[in-house]
Length: 356
Ligand code: AN7
Image 1 (cartoon, protein in one colour):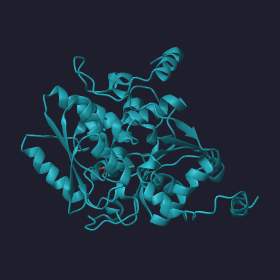
Image 2: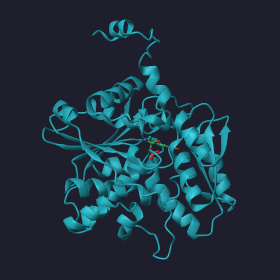
Image 3: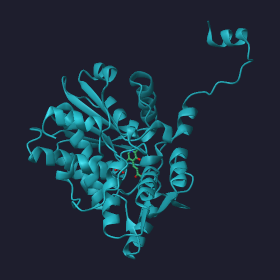
Image 4: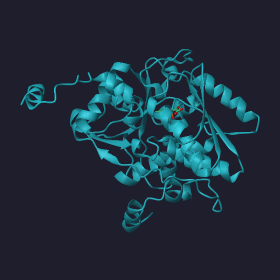
Protein backbone atom coordinates (compact mmCIF):
# COMPACT_ATOMS: atom_id res chain seq x y z
CA UNK A 1 0.00 0.00 0.00
CA UNK A 2 1.82 3.04 -1.16
CA UNK A 3 -0.78 5.44 -2.49
CA UNK A 4 -3.93 6.93 -1.04
CA UNK A 5 -5.94 4.95 -3.59
CA UNK A 6 -4.42 1.69 -2.45
CA UNK A 7 -5.19 2.61 1.15
CA UNK A 8 -8.78 3.36 0.26
CA UNK A 9 -9.18 0.10 -1.64
CA UNK A 10 -7.76 -1.81 1.29
CA UNK A 11 -10.20 -0.18 3.68
CA UNK A 12 -13.16 -0.88 1.44
CA UNK A 13 -12.32 -4.53 1.16
CA UNK A 14 -9.93 -5.35 3.94
CA UNK A 15 -8.30 -8.71 3.13
CA UNK A 16 -6.92 -9.66 6.56
CA UNK A 17 -3.44 -9.06 7.90
CA UNK A 18 -1.54 -11.60 5.80
CA UNK A 19 -2.63 -10.09 2.50
CA UNK A 20 -2.37 -6.53 3.84
CA UNK A 21 1.18 -6.95 5.15
CA UNK A 22 2.53 -9.93 3.22
CA UNK A 23 5.85 -8.20 2.60
CA UNK A 24 6.58 -8.19 6.33
CA UNK A 25 5.39 -11.73 7.09
CA UNK A 26 7.09 -15.12 6.70
CA UNK A 27 4.16 -16.71 4.86
CA UNK A 28 5.19 -18.51 1.64
CA UNK A 29 3.38 -17.43 -1.52
CA UNK A 30 1.97 -20.88 -2.12
CA UNK A 31 0.47 -21.25 1.37
CA UNK A 32 -3.30 -21.42 1.60
CA UNK A 33 -4.14 -18.44 3.82
CA UNK A 34 -6.36 -19.21 6.82
CA UNK A 35 -8.09 -15.93 7.55
CA UNK A 36 -11.28 -14.44 8.92
CA UNK A 37 -10.15 -11.04 7.60
CA UNK A 38 -8.85 -9.96 10.97
CA UNK A 39 -7.12 -6.63 11.59
CA UNK A 40 -8.05 -3.34 9.98
CA UNK A 41 -9.45 -2.34 13.36
CA UNK A 42 -10.44 1.25 14.13
CA UNK A 43 -8.08 3.75 15.74
CA UNK A 44 -10.41 6.14 17.57
CA UNK A 45 -9.48 9.64 18.67
CA UNK A 46 -10.40 9.76 22.37
CA UNK A 47 -11.50 13.35 22.84
CA UNK A 48 -12.21 13.29 26.59
CA UNK A 49 -9.09 11.34 27.49
CA UNK A 50 -7.08 13.68 25.28
CA UNK A 51 -8.40 16.68 27.19
CA UNK A 52 -7.69 14.92 30.49
CA UNK A 53 -4.07 14.22 29.55
CA UNK A 54 -3.29 17.37 27.52
CA UNK A 55 -2.23 15.19 24.62
CA UNK A 56 -3.68 13.38 21.62
CA UNK A 57 -4.92 10.02 22.83
CA UNK A 58 -5.99 7.32 20.37
CA UNK A 59 -7.59 3.97 21.16
CA UNK A 60 -6.83 0.96 18.97
CA UNK A 61 -9.96 -1.15 19.41
CA UNK A 62 -8.95 -4.76 18.94
CA UNK A 63 -12.37 -5.90 20.12
CA UNK A 64 -13.43 -5.27 16.51
CA UNK A 65 -11.56 -8.38 15.35
CA UNK A 66 -13.57 -11.41 14.14
CA UNK A 67 -13.41 -13.24 17.47
CA UNK A 68 -13.30 -10.04 19.48
CA UNK A 69 -9.64 -9.82 20.42
CA UNK A 70 -6.14 -9.10 19.07
CA UNK A 71 -5.35 -12.81 19.15
CA UNK A 72 -6.83 -13.16 15.64
CA UNK A 73 -3.84 -11.29 14.15
CA UNK A 74 -1.45 -13.92 15.43
CA UNK A 75 -3.75 -16.84 14.86
CA UNK A 76 -4.16 -16.23 11.13
CA UNK A 77 -0.38 -16.60 10.67
CA UNK A 78 0.05 -19.46 13.16
CA UNK A 79 -2.85 -21.43 11.67
CA UNK A 80 -1.79 -20.78 8.07
CA UNK A 81 1.69 -22.11 8.87
CA UNK A 82 0.32 -25.06 10.87
CA UNK A 83 -1.91 -26.04 7.95
CA UNK A 84 0.97 -25.54 5.52
CA UNK A 85 3.20 -27.87 7.55
CA UNK A 86 0.58 -30.59 7.45
CA UNK A 87 -0.47 -30.39 11.11
CA UNK A 88 -3.67 -32.17 12.04
CA UNK A 89 -4.23 -30.65 15.49
CA UNK A 90 -3.36 -27.47 17.36
CA UNK A 91 -3.20 -26.92 21.10
CA UNK A 92 -3.06 -23.90 23.38
CA UNK A 93 -3.28 -22.88 27.00
CA UNK A 94 -5.46 -19.86 27.48
CA UNK A 95 -7.02 -17.35 29.81
CA UNK A 96 -9.79 -17.30 27.18
CA UNK A 97 -9.08 -15.20 24.12
CA UNK A 98 -6.42 -17.43 22.62
CA UNK A 99 -8.77 -20.38 22.99
CA UNK A 100 -11.55 -18.52 21.18
CA UNK A 101 -9.23 -17.50 18.34
CA UNK A 102 -7.64 -20.92 18.06
CA UNK A 103 -11.04 -22.60 17.95
CA UNK A 104 -12.32 -20.25 15.25
CA UNK A 105 -9.25 -20.40 12.98
CA UNK A 106 -8.94 -24.18 13.44
CA UNK A 107 -12.55 -24.51 12.33
CA UNK A 108 -11.74 -22.47 9.23
CA UNK A 109 -8.66 -24.61 8.53
CA UNK A 110 -10.53 -27.81 9.42
CA UNK A 111 -7.92 -28.71 12.03
CA UNK A 112 -8.60 -30.16 15.43
CA UNK A 113 -8.24 -27.59 18.22
CA UNK A 114 -7.52 -28.51 21.82
CA UNK A 115 -7.61 -25.80 24.46
CA UNK A 116 -6.56 -25.94 28.10
CA UNK A 117 -8.18 -23.33 30.31
CA UNK A 118 -8.07 -22.64 34.05
CA UNK A 119 -11.32 -23.95 35.50
CA UNK A 120 -13.51 -21.19 36.92
CA UNK A 121 -11.32 -18.31 35.72
CA UNK A 122 -12.35 -17.75 32.14
CA UNK A 123 -14.90 -15.17 31.09
CA UNK A 124 -18.22 -16.57 29.94
CA UNK A 125 -18.14 -15.24 26.39
CA UNK A 126 -14.74 -16.78 25.72
CA UNK A 127 -15.82 -20.19 27.00
CA UNK A 128 -18.94 -19.96 24.81
CA UNK A 129 -16.77 -19.16 21.78
CA UNK A 130 -14.33 -22.03 22.28
CA UNK A 131 -17.23 -24.44 22.68
CA UNK A 132 -19.35 -23.28 19.77
CA UNK A 133 -16.43 -23.13 17.30
CA UNK A 134 -15.95 -26.80 18.14
CA UNK A 135 -12.71 -26.95 20.12
CA UNK A 136 -12.00 -29.76 22.53
CA UNK A 137 -12.13 -27.74 25.74
CA UNK A 138 -10.28 -29.07 28.77
CA UNK A 139 -10.84 -27.14 32.00
CA UNK A 140 -7.88 -27.84 34.26
CA UNK A 141 -7.68 -27.69 38.04
CA UNK A 142 -4.83 -25.24 37.87
CA UNK A 143 -4.01 -21.78 36.54
CA UNK A 144 -2.84 -20.54 33.12
CA UNK A 145 0.84 -20.96 33.94
CA UNK A 146 0.33 -24.64 34.74
CA UNK A 147 -1.73 -25.10 31.57
CA UNK A 148 1.08 -23.60 29.49
CA UNK A 149 3.64 -25.95 31.08
CA UNK A 150 1.52 -28.91 30.01
CA UNK A 151 1.01 -27.46 26.53
CA UNK A 152 4.78 -27.14 26.09
CA UNK A 153 5.09 -30.84 26.96
CA UNK A 154 2.30 -31.75 24.53
CA UNK A 155 4.12 -29.78 21.84
CA UNK A 156 7.31 -31.74 22.45
CA UNK A 157 5.53 -34.96 21.48
CA UNK A 158 5.39 -33.61 17.92
CA UNK A 159 1.76 -34.72 17.63
CA UNK A 160 0.23 -31.28 17.98
CA UNK A 161 1.24 -27.74 17.01
CA UNK A 162 1.32 -25.22 19.85
CA UNK A 163 -0.45 -21.97 18.95
CA UNK A 164 0.39 -20.00 22.08
CA UNK A 165 2.65 -16.98 21.56
CA UNK A 166 5.70 -19.19 22.15
CA UNK A 167 4.95 -20.03 18.52
CA UNK A 168 6.88 -17.24 16.73
CA UNK A 169 4.26 -16.97 13.97
CA UNK A 170 1.83 -15.59 16.55
CA UNK A 171 4.18 -12.68 17.26
CA UNK A 172 4.65 -12.13 13.51
CA UNK A 173 0.92 -11.70 13.03
CA UNK A 174 0.42 -9.53 16.07
CA UNK A 175 3.10 -7.03 15.04
CA UNK A 176 0.71 -5.88 12.29
CA UNK A 177 -1.15 -3.88 14.94
CA UNK A 178 1.82 -1.51 15.04
CA UNK A 179 1.81 -1.24 11.24
CA UNK A 180 -1.84 -0.23 11.24
CA UNK A 181 -1.27 2.44 13.87
CA UNK A 182 1.55 4.03 11.88
CA UNK A 183 -0.45 3.73 8.65
CA UNK A 184 -3.42 5.47 10.28
CA UNK A 185 -1.50 8.28 11.99
CA UNK A 186 1.13 8.73 9.29
CA UNK A 187 3.79 8.55 12.01
CA UNK A 188 4.56 6.56 15.15
CA UNK A 189 3.02 7.65 18.45
CA UNK A 190 5.31 8.98 21.18
CA UNK A 191 3.82 6.60 23.77
CA UNK A 192 2.25 3.17 23.36
CA UNK A 193 0.23 1.84 26.31
CA UNK A 194 -0.63 -1.86 26.38
CA UNK A 195 -1.82 -4.51 28.85
CA UNK A 196 0.71 -7.23 29.67
CA UNK A 197 -0.16 -10.83 30.52
CA UNK A 198 1.98 -13.46 28.86
CA UNK A 199 3.86 -10.51 27.30
CA UNK A 200 3.64 -11.68 23.68
CA UNK A 201 1.75 -8.64 22.47
CA UNK A 202 4.08 -5.96 23.83
CA UNK A 203 6.97 -7.90 22.25
CA UNK A 204 5.06 -8.09 18.97
CA UNK A 205 4.21 -4.37 18.85
CA UNK A 206 7.81 -3.44 19.58
CA UNK A 207 8.94 -5.71 16.74
CA UNK A 208 6.37 -4.14 14.43
CA UNK A 209 7.36 -0.56 15.19
CA UNK A 210 11.02 -1.45 14.69
CA UNK A 211 10.40 -3.11 11.34
CA UNK A 212 8.43 -0.11 10.09
CA UNK A 213 11.18 2.19 11.36
CA UNK A 214 13.85 0.14 9.57
CA UNK A 215 11.76 0.32 6.40
CA UNK A 216 11.44 4.11 6.62
CA UNK A 217 7.70 4.00 7.32
CA UNK A 218 8.19 6.05 10.50
CA UNK A 219 11.09 8.15 11.71
CA UNK A 220 10.62 7.76 15.46
CA UNK A 221 9.75 4.95 17.87
CA UNK A 222 7.29 5.09 20.78
CA UNK A 223 8.04 4.50 24.43
CA UNK A 224 6.49 1.13 25.23
CA UNK A 225 4.40 1.37 28.39
CA UNK A 226 3.18 -2.06 29.52
CA UNK A 227 0.79 -2.61 32.42
CA UNK A 228 0.17 -5.72 34.47
CA UNK A 229 -2.53 -6.16 37.10
CA UNK A 230 -1.18 -5.60 40.62
CA UNK A 231 -2.08 -9.12 41.78
CA UNK A 232 -0.43 -10.64 38.70
CA UNK A 233 2.63 -8.45 38.19
CA UNK A 234 5.65 -10.76 38.02
CA UNK A 235 7.62 -8.48 35.70
CA UNK A 236 7.13 -5.49 37.99
CA UNK A 237 7.83 -7.56 41.12
CA UNK A 238 10.84 -9.21 39.48
CA UNK A 239 9.68 -12.69 40.48
CA UNK A 240 7.20 -15.38 39.50
CA UNK A 241 3.76 -14.94 41.08
CA UNK A 242 2.59 -18.42 42.06
CA UNK A 243 -1.02 -17.50 42.79
CA UNK A 244 -1.89 -14.59 40.48
CA UNK A 245 -5.23 -12.89 41.17
CA UNK A 246 -7.07 -10.11 39.35
CA UNK A 247 -10.53 -9.24 38.11
CA UNK A 248 -8.88 -9.01 34.68
CA UNK A 249 -8.80 -12.79 34.18
CA UNK A 250 -7.25 -12.42 30.69
CA UNK A 251 -4.00 -11.24 32.31
CA UNK A 252 -4.12 -13.48 35.38
CA UNK A 253 -0.65 -14.81 34.56
CA UNK A 254 2.22 -15.27 37.02
CA UNK A 255 5.07 -16.49 34.80
CA UNK A 256 4.89 -14.82 31.37
CA UNK A 257 6.46 -16.70 28.46
CA UNK A 258 7.75 -13.48 26.85
CA UNK A 259 9.02 -11.94 30.11
CA UNK A 260 12.36 -11.03 28.47
CA UNK A 261 10.64 -9.58 25.40
CA UNK A 262 8.61 -7.24 27.58
CA UNK A 263 11.68 -6.07 29.51
CA UNK A 264 13.55 -5.53 26.27
CA UNK A 265 10.71 -3.50 24.74
CA UNK A 266 10.52 -1.31 27.82
CA UNK A 267 14.27 -0.78 28.16
CA UNK A 268 15.10 -0.30 24.47
CA UNK A 269 12.26 2.20 24.05
CA UNK A 270 12.93 4.05 27.30
CA UNK A 271 9.46 2.98 28.41
CA UNK A 272 8.36 1.04 31.48
CA UNK A 273 6.39 -1.91 32.81
CA UNK A 274 4.04 -0.87 35.60
CA UNK A 275 1.15 -2.24 37.60
CA UNK A 276 -2.45 -1.11 38.00
CA UNK A 277 -4.86 -2.19 40.72
CA UNK A 278 -8.18 -3.89 40.03
CA UNK A 279 -9.85 -0.69 41.23
CA UNK A 280 -7.92 1.38 38.68
CA UNK A 281 -8.68 -1.17 35.94
CA UNK A 282 -12.41 -1.09 36.68
CA UNK A 283 -12.47 2.71 36.83
CA UNK A 284 -10.85 2.91 33.38
CA UNK A 285 -13.20 0.17 32.11
CA UNK A 286 -16.32 2.09 33.07
CA UNK A 287 -14.81 5.43 31.99
CA UNK A 288 -14.10 4.08 28.50
CA UNK A 289 -17.70 2.97 28.09
CA UNK A 290 -19.24 6.19 29.39
CA UNK A 291 -16.82 8.81 28.06
CA UNK A 292 -15.44 7.23 24.89
CA UNK A 293 -18.27 4.78 24.05
CA UNK A 294 -15.93 1.82 23.90
CA UNK A 295 -16.84 -1.34 25.75
CA UNK A 296 -13.66 -3.31 26.22
CA UNK A 297 -12.91 -6.15 28.57
CA UNK A 298 -11.30 -5.47 31.97
CA UNK A 299 -7.77 -6.60 30.96
CA UNK A 300 -7.86 -4.19 28.01
CA UNK A 301 -8.62 -1.26 30.30
CA UNK A 302 -5.26 -1.83 32.02
CA UNK A 303 -3.64 0.21 29.23
CA UNK A 304 -5.86 3.21 29.89
CA UNK A 305 -5.61 2.73 33.67
CA UNK A 306 -1.86 2.92 33.17
CA UNK A 307 -2.18 6.10 31.11
CA UNK A 308 -4.41 7.67 33.76
CA UNK A 309 -1.66 7.40 36.37
CA UNK A 310 1.25 8.30 34.10
CA UNK A 311 2.40 11.82 33.31
CA UNK A 312 2.89 12.25 29.58
CA UNK A 313 4.39 15.41 28.06
CA UNK A 314 1.94 18.02 26.77
CA UNK A 315 1.32 17.42 23.09
CA UNK A 316 2.32 13.76 23.21
CA UNK A 317 0.68 11.35 20.78
CA UNK A 318 -0.53 8.39 22.80
CA UNK A 319 -1.99 5.12 21.60
CA UNK A 320 -3.66 2.74 24.05
CA UNK A 321 -4.44 -0.74 22.78
CA UNK A 322 -7.83 -2.06 23.87
CA UNK A 323 -7.13 -5.72 23.35
CA UNK A 324 -10.57 -7.34 23.64
CA UNK A 325 -14.32 -6.72 23.48
CA UNK A 326 -16.39 -6.03 26.60
CA UNK A 327 -19.01 -8.59 25.58
CA UNK A 328 -16.43 -11.29 26.27
CA UNK A 329 -17.04 -10.84 29.97
CA UNK A 330 -20.62 -9.78 30.67
CA UNK A 331 -20.38 -10.92 34.29
CA UNK A 332 -17.86 -8.24 35.19
CA UNK A 333 -19.99 -5.54 33.59
CA UNK A 334 -23.10 -6.44 35.50
CA UNK A 335 -21.31 -6.78 38.80
CA UNK A 336 -19.97 -3.24 38.38
CA UNK A 337 -23.40 -1.70 38.16
CA UNK A 338 -26.47 -2.57 40.15
CA UNK A 339 -28.85 -4.38 37.81
CA UNK A 340 -32.25 -2.68 38.26
CA UNK A 341 -35.17 -4.62 39.72
CA UNK A 342 -38.31 -5.08 37.59
CA UNK A 343 -41.04 -2.46 37.94
CA UNK A 344 -44.76 -2.63 37.23
CA UNK A 345 -45.58 -2.37 33.52
CA UNK A 346 -47.49 0.90 33.88
CA UNK A 347 -46.75 4.38 32.59
CA UNK A 348 -46.97 5.71 36.13
CA UNK A 349 -44.47 3.24 37.62
CA UNK A 350 -42.02 3.72 34.77
CA UNK A 351 -42.29 7.53 34.84
CA UNK A 352 -41.52 7.42 38.53
CA UNK A 353 -38.59 5.04 37.97
CA UNK A 354 -36.92 7.19 35.31
CA UNK A 355 -37.80 10.52 36.93
CA UNK A 356 -39.76 12.16 34.08
C1 AN7 B 1 -7.84 -9.09 26.34
O1 AN7 B 1 -5.91 -15.66 25.82
O2 AN7 B 1 -2.97 -14.90 27.42
O3 AN7 B 1 0.67 -10.00 27.14
O4 AN7 B 1 -4.53 -17.00 26.79
O5 AN7 B 1 -6.79 -11.70 26.38
O6 AN7 B 1 0.24 -10.92 24.86
O7 AN7 B 1 -0.46 -12.20 26.88
C2 AN7 B 1 -4.66 -13.39 26.75
C3 AN7 B 1 -4.00 -12.24 26.99
C4 AN7 B 1 -4.31 -8.58 27.08
C5 AN7 B 1 -2.33 -9.94 27.38
N1 AN7 B 1 -5.60 -8.37 26.84
O8 AN7 B 1 -1.61 -10.12 26.20
C6 AN7 B 1 -4.89 -15.87 26.47
C7 AN7 B 1 -4.08 -14.71 26.92
C8 AN7 B 1 -6.43 -9.40 26.61
C9 AN7 B 1 -5.93 -10.71 26.62
C10 AN7 B 1 -3.77 -9.83 27.11
C11 AN7 B 1 -4.58 -10.93 26.90
P1 AN7 B 1 -0.21 -10.86 26.26
